[in-house]
Image 1 (cartoon, protein in one colour):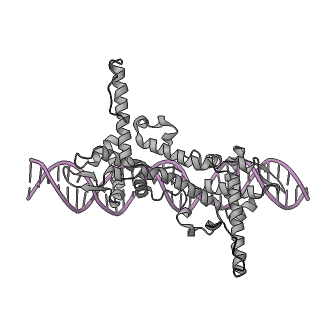
Image 2 (cartoon, chains in turn brown, purple, green, yellow; image 1 turned 90 degrees about the vertical axis):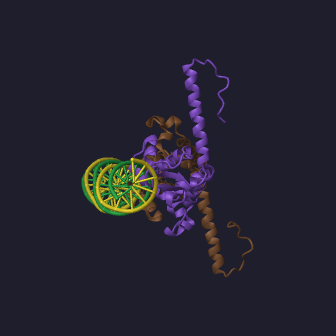
Image 3 (spheres, each protein chain N blue to C red; image 1 turned 135 degrees about the vertical axis):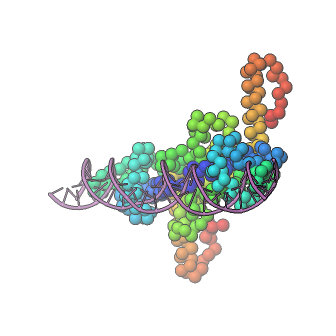
Length: 162
Length: 162
DNA sequence: TTCTTTGTTGACTAAAATAATCAACATAGT
DNA sequence: ACTATGTTGATTATTTTAGTCAACAAAGAA
């Protein structure tokens, strides 16, 4: 039950893209550097995302990859579907016919519930959410960093950790 | 994001065991036949279940495998944990240290939510639930079968569902 | 006791998936 | 032209999956 690097790296690539949208096309090289993923591998991950209409690429100098939809309109369920295929934990959940036991199999019903649960998370999370959380995290870090530097000069209103 | 045959077959083995508990030890051979899984493979799946204290085995003639706990006390989360290891979709959810990006990584947070969602299903489903659903399904099938055979002669008092 | 039934363990293997790398090529700016 | 960039396909090493097989151990039955 592990997500492969396709889904993980691909999601991070899109997040990186979302964080740098509005600056024109983003070269894979830059994403590779920032995300610490080999560019050669990203080249392959971008293909299904283009086929899925999530991104567009521009060749040549000053080229790169651009998001085609607003981050708020890109659900993680869509991303994972493109990169990993169905998130169903077993194939018979989507295709009952592949096993003659499907009809009477109750474990299959449980795997179906699992699929629903996973989908619930991925359907309600958008790229915009990731962007928001990322910015919050970075702001929080900068806050605590300077807090540390200034020897806790003013620590009354940081908030955010819990 | 697929469950391997370990988790799937192992769960079915335990369900089969639960359905035949109270009849003494159940030989792997019988489970293999009913569940249509090779006995050689089941031999390997039983090992972690014994180590986890879910079943006990008896060697020799009339031997077999027996459940050590009541089906109502066996949660699927426990079963899957033993057979597949953690259900976390990525390792960094359980072990932040393995990636220096963990602290600032928001995709990791999403995978954490996914883990929670999956766990929610597996923690609230017991072997007893599977047994109950299985019996309901079989009763329903018998109902519609005889209904079909007898051309709906008497369909008032089937009962047994719920 | 001896035979048979059953589980136990470890070695081995075929096939597939994973996670890339590399090179040749296409295209668009400069 | 030259350079920066994406595109595609071939290739590969490694790991995981999904088993099989055989030698062995133990317990009941004859």
